[in-house]
Amino acid sequence: MRLVLLGPPGAGKGTQSARLVEKLGIPQLSTGDMLRAAVAAGTPIGLKAKAIMDAGQLVPDEIVIGIIDQRIDEPDCAKGFILDGFPRTVAQAEALRELLAKKGIGLDAVVELVVDENALVDRMRKRVEETLAAGKPVRADDNPESFRTRLDAYRKQTAPVSAYYAEKGELKKVDGMLPIDEVTAAIDKTLGH
Ligand code: AP5
Image (spheres, rainbow, N blue to C red):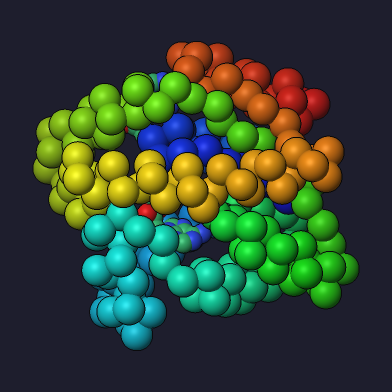
Protein backbone atom coordinates (compact mmCIF):
# COMPACT_ATOMS: atom_id res chain seq x y z
CA MET A 1 0.00 0.00 0.00
CA ARG A 2 1.42 3.37 -1.04
CA LEU A 3 -0.47 6.07 0.77
CA VAL A 4 -0.41 9.86 1.11
CA LEU A 5 -1.84 11.49 4.26
CA LEU A 6 -2.78 15.15 3.76
CA GLY A 7 -3.94 17.71 6.29
CA PRO A 8 -2.91 20.95 7.99
CA PRO A 9 -0.47 21.15 10.92
CA GLY A 10 -1.94 19.33 13.90
CA ALA A 11 -4.55 17.47 11.81
CA GLY A 12 -3.33 14.13 13.17
CA LYS A 13 -1.17 12.90 10.28
CA GLY A 14 1.60 11.70 12.60
CA THR A 15 -0.86 10.13 15.05
CA GLN A 16 -2.68 8.18 12.35
CA SER A 17 0.53 7.27 10.46
CA ALA A 18 1.90 5.58 13.60
CA ARG A 19 -1.22 3.41 13.77
CA LEU A 20 -1.03 2.54 10.07
CA VAL A 21 2.62 1.54 10.47
CA GLU A 22 1.54 -1.02 13.12
CA LYS A 23 -1.36 -2.30 11.07
CA LEU A 24 0.16 -2.41 7.60
CA GLY A 25 3.80 -3.12 8.45
CA ILE A 26 5.06 -0.38 6.13
CA PRO A 27 7.18 2.65 7.10
CA GLN A 28 6.00 6.20 7.77
CA LEU A 29 7.96 8.66 5.65
CA SER A 30 7.56 12.01 7.39
CA THR A 31 9.51 14.76 5.66
CA GLY A 32 9.13 16.82 8.86
CA ASP A 33 10.80 14.07 10.95
CA MET A 34 13.53 13.57 8.33
CA LEU A 35 14.25 17.30 8.18
CA ARG A 36 14.31 17.56 12.01
CA ALA A 37 16.79 14.64 12.06
CA ALA A 38 18.94 16.49 9.50
CA VAL A 39 18.79 19.66 11.63
CA ALA A 40 19.77 17.70 14.77
CA ALA A 41 22.66 16.03 12.92
CA GLY A 42 23.85 19.35 11.45
CA THR A 43 23.95 17.98 7.88
CA PRO A 44 24.12 20.48 4.95
CA ILE A 45 20.35 19.98 4.38
CA GLY A 46 19.70 20.51 8.09
CA LEU A 47 21.73 23.72 8.12
CA LYS A 48 19.71 25.05 5.17
CA ALA A 49 16.36 23.95 6.59
CA LYS A 50 16.63 25.02 10.24
CA ALA A 51 15.69 28.71 10.07
CA ILE A 52 12.97 28.06 7.46
CA MET A 53 11.36 25.36 9.61
CA ASP A 54 11.65 27.31 12.85
CA ALA A 55 9.76 30.18 11.20
CA GLY A 56 7.04 27.80 9.98
CA GLN A 57 7.73 28.21 6.27
CA LEU A 58 8.17 25.45 3.70
CA VAL A 59 11.61 24.10 2.83
CA PRO A 60 12.39 24.37 -0.94
CA ASP A 61 10.73 21.70 -3.10
CA GLU A 62 13.99 20.33 -4.54
CA ILE A 63 15.28 19.46 -1.06
CA VAL A 64 12.24 17.44 0.04
CA ILE A 65 11.74 15.82 -3.38
CA GLY A 66 15.38 14.64 -3.28
CA ILE A 67 14.92 13.23 0.24
CA ILE A 68 11.78 11.27 -0.73
CA ASP A 69 13.22 10.05 -4.05
CA GLN A 70 16.15 8.43 -2.19
CA ARG A 71 14.13 7.18 0.78
CA ILE A 72 11.56 5.18 -1.21
CA ASP A 73 14.37 3.22 -2.88
CA GLU A 74 15.30 1.72 0.49
CA PRO A 75 14.38 -1.95 1.02
CA ASP A 76 11.82 -1.31 3.79
CA CYS A 77 9.68 0.61 1.28
CA ALA A 78 9.38 -2.34 -1.12
CA LYS A 79 5.91 -3.29 0.18
CA GLY A 80 4.74 0.32 0.42
CA PHE A 81 4.95 3.43 2.58
CA ILE A 82 2.91 6.17 4.20
CA LEU A 83 3.84 9.68 3.10
CA ASP A 84 3.18 12.07 6.00
CA GLY A 85 3.66 15.77 5.21
CA PHE A 86 4.65 15.17 1.58
CA PRO A 87 3.64 16.34 -0.99
CA ARG A 88 3.00 19.83 0.33
CA THR A 89 3.00 21.83 -2.91
CA VAL A 90 1.57 21.05 -6.33
CA ALA A 91 5.15 20.96 -7.68
CA GLN A 92 5.96 18.24 -5.10
CA ALA A 93 2.80 16.30 -6.07
CA GLU A 94 3.79 16.42 -9.74
CA ALA A 95 7.38 15.42 -8.95
CA LEU A 96 6.09 12.51 -6.85
CA ARG A 97 3.91 11.30 -9.71
CA GLU A 98 6.89 11.43 -12.08
CA LEU A 99 9.37 9.77 -9.77
CA LEU A 100 6.96 6.95 -8.91
CA ALA A 101 6.21 6.43 -12.61
CA LYS A 102 9.96 6.17 -13.28
CA LYS A 103 10.14 3.45 -10.63
CA GLY A 104 7.14 1.73 -12.26
CA ILE A 105 4.83 2.25 -9.27
CA GLY A 106 1.95 4.54 -8.29
CA LEU A 107 -0.11 5.64 -5.29
CA ASP A 108 -2.92 3.45 -3.96
CA ALA A 109 -4.66 6.14 -1.93
CA VAL A 110 -4.57 9.82 -0.95
CA VAL A 111 -6.40 10.54 2.31
CA GLU A 112 -7.05 14.04 3.60
CA LEU A 113 -7.81 14.64 7.29
CA VAL A 114 -10.38 17.43 7.24
CA VAL A 115 -10.29 19.56 10.38
CA ASP A 116 -11.63 22.79 11.79
CA GLU A 117 -8.71 25.25 11.84
CA ASN A 118 -9.91 26.73 15.14
CA ALA A 119 -9.14 23.45 16.91
CA LEU A 120 -5.58 23.23 15.66
CA VAL A 121 -3.95 25.84 17.89
CA ASP A 122 -5.38 24.00 20.92
CA ARG A 123 -3.97 20.70 19.64
CA MET A 124 -0.55 22.32 19.20
CA ARG A 125 -0.74 23.67 22.78
CA LYS A 126 -1.73 20.23 24.06
CA ARG A 127 1.20 18.63 22.27
CA VAL A 128 3.57 21.19 23.82
CA GLU A 129 2.19 20.38 27.30
CA GLU A 130 2.51 16.62 26.70
CA THR A 131 6.04 17.00 25.37
CA LEU A 132 7.12 19.07 28.37
CA ALA A 133 5.45 16.61 30.77
CA ALA A 134 7.45 13.81 29.12
CA GLY A 135 10.64 15.81 29.67
CA LYS A 136 11.33 16.03 25.93
CA PRO A 137 12.35 19.09 23.90
CA VAL A 138 9.48 21.07 22.33
CA ARG A 139 9.54 21.54 18.56
CA ALA A 140 10.96 24.97 17.67
CA ASP A 141 7.95 25.60 15.37
CA ASP A 142 5.33 24.71 18.02
CA ASN A 143 4.75 28.29 19.17
CA PRO A 144 1.82 30.58 18.27
CA GLU A 145 3.75 32.75 15.80
CA SER A 146 5.33 29.91 13.78
CA PHE A 147 2.08 27.97 13.96
CA ARG A 148 0.24 30.88 12.31
CA THR A 149 2.84 30.87 9.52
CA ARG A 150 2.47 27.07 9.16
CA LEU A 151 -1.30 27.43 8.79
CA ASP A 152 -0.81 30.21 6.28
CA ALA A 153 1.63 28.07 4.27
CA TYR A 154 -0.91 25.25 4.40
CA ARG A 155 -3.71 27.47 3.05
CA LYS A 156 -1.60 28.99 0.27
CA GLN A 157 0.67 26.13 -0.78
CA THR A 158 -0.79 22.83 0.44
CA ALA A 159 -4.57 23.22 0.09
CA PRO A 160 -4.07 23.25 -3.72
CA VAL A 161 -2.51 19.77 -3.40
CA SER A 162 -5.89 18.44 -2.19
CA ALA A 163 -7.52 20.07 -5.21
CA TYR A 164 -4.84 18.49 -7.44
CA TYR A 165 -5.71 14.97 -6.24
CA ALA A 166 -9.47 15.71 -6.16
CA GLU A 167 -9.38 16.74 -9.82
CA LYS A 168 -7.78 13.41 -10.67
CA GLY A 169 -10.47 11.58 -8.67
CA GLU A 170 -7.86 10.24 -6.24
CA LEU A 171 -8.72 12.14 -3.05
CA LYS A 172 -10.58 10.53 -0.13
CA LYS A 173 -11.65 12.75 2.77
CA VAL A 174 -11.89 11.68 6.39
CA ASP A 175 -13.31 13.73 9.27
CA GLY A 176 -10.25 14.54 11.41
CA MET A 177 -12.36 16.18 14.12
CA LEU A 178 -13.61 12.84 15.43
CA PRO A 179 -11.89 11.23 18.43
CA ILE A 180 -8.57 9.60 17.48
CA ASP A 181 -9.91 6.00 17.43
CA GLU A 182 -12.83 7.01 15.25
CA VAL A 183 -10.51 8.75 12.77
CA THR A 184 -8.49 5.51 12.64
CA ALA A 185 -11.68 3.52 11.96
CA ALA A 186 -12.74 5.96 9.24
CA ILE A 187 -9.34 5.67 7.53
CA ASP A 188 -9.52 1.86 7.71
CA LYS A 189 -12.96 1.96 6.10
CA THR A 190 -11.73 4.31 3.38
CA LEU A 191 -8.82 1.99 2.66
CA GLY A 192 -11.15 -1.02 2.63
CA HIS A 193 -9.73 -2.79 5.71
P1 AP5 B 1 5.71 18.43 9.82
O1 AP5 B 1 6.59 17.74 10.78
O2 AP5 B 1 5.15 17.64 8.69
O3 AP5 B 1 4.57 19.13 10.67
P2 AP5 B 1 3.07 19.55 10.35
O4 AP5 B 1 2.53 19.23 9.00
O5 AP5 B 1 3.01 20.98 10.72
O6 AP5 B 1 2.25 18.60 11.20
P3 AP5 B 1 2.34 18.27 12.70
O7 AP5 B 1 3.42 17.29 12.97
O8 AP5 B 1 2.32 19.52 13.53
O9 AP5 B 1 0.89 17.67 12.90
P4 AP5 B 1 0.25 16.27 12.54
O10 AP5 B 1 -0.79 16.46 11.47
O11 AP5 B 1 1.26 15.19 12.34
O12 AP5 B 1 -0.55 16.06 13.90
P5 AP5 B 1 -0.21 15.12 15.14
O13 AP5 B 1 -0.58 13.71 14.81
O14 AP5 B 1 1.16 15.39 15.67
O15 AP5 B 1 6.47 19.67 9.18
C1 AP5 B 1 7.22 20.57 9.94
C2 AP5 B 1 7.97 21.54 9.04
O16 AP5 B 1 8.90 20.82 8.21
C3 AP5 B 1 7.13 22.34 8.04
O17 AP5 B 1 6.56 23.51 8.61
C4 AP5 B 1 8.18 22.66 6.96
O18 AP5 B 1 9.03 23.70 7.37
C5 AP5 B 1 9.00 21.38 6.90
N1 AP5 B 1 8.49 20.42 5.93
C6 AP5 B 1 8.03 19.16 6.20
N2 AP5 B 1 7.63 18.55 5.08
C7 AP5 B 1 7.82 19.45 4.07
C8 AP5 B 1 7.57 19.41 2.67
N3 AP5 B 1 7.03 18.33 2.08
N4 AP5 B 1 7.87 20.51 1.94
C9 AP5 B 1 8.42 21.60 2.51
N5 AP5 B 1 8.68 21.71 3.82
C10 AP5 B 1 8.38 20.65 4.61
O19 AP5 B 1 -1.30 15.67 16.17
C11 AP5 B 1 -1.16 16.94 16.78
C12 AP5 B 1 -1.75 16.91 18.20
O20 AP5 B 1 -3.16 16.69 18.14
C13 AP5 B 1 -1.19 15.77 19.07
O21 AP5 B 1 -1.06 16.22 20.39
C14 AP5 B 1 -2.26 14.68 18.98
O22 AP5 B 1 -2.32 13.86 20.12
C15 AP5 B 1 -3.53 15.49 18.83
N6 AP5 B 1 -4.54 14.83 18.00
C16 AP5 B 1 -4.34 14.12 16.84
N7 AP5 B 1 -5.51 13.67 16.36
C17 AP5 B 1 -6.48 14.11 17.21
C18 AP5 B 1 -7.91 13.98 17.23
N8 AP5 B 1 -8.56 13.28 16.29
N9 AP5 B 1 -8.57 14.56 18.25
C19 AP5 B 1 -7.94 15.25 19.22
N10 AP5 B 1 -6.57 15.42 19.27
C20 AP5 B 1 -5.87 14.85 18.25
